[in-house]
Length: 127
Image (cartoon, rainbow, N blue to C red; front, side):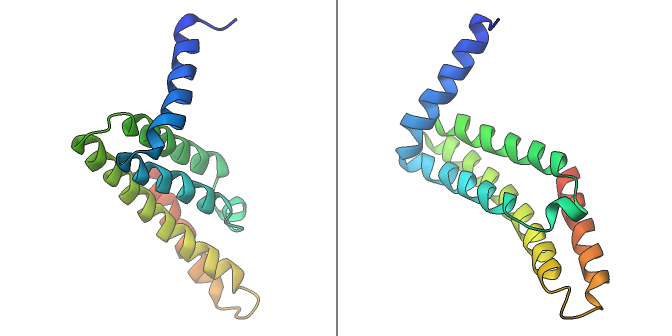
């Protein structure tokens, strides 16, 4: 059975998603959502990084961004830009891993690069 607080929370998230992402302050939130989808498409994640850790981090970034977008003020925009910067750091680390992973067949020496990139993604996920 769903509590009233849970129902209100779900309604609030739905309202925020539909109403506030179209505002100028919501633009960085949309970028966070698009970045999340792009990161999840990385082919290397399941092989070298725990997918549940990545999912937890991305879920937290997504919901924080969506809820902050409801603020519709300059402070909300600044907070959203901070969320976007966090996502960009993670995306850069994932891109490095994904690039090395996709090139692994062309050069046997990429094993060390893949390991280093995977370590970088894990470090970003911890912080």
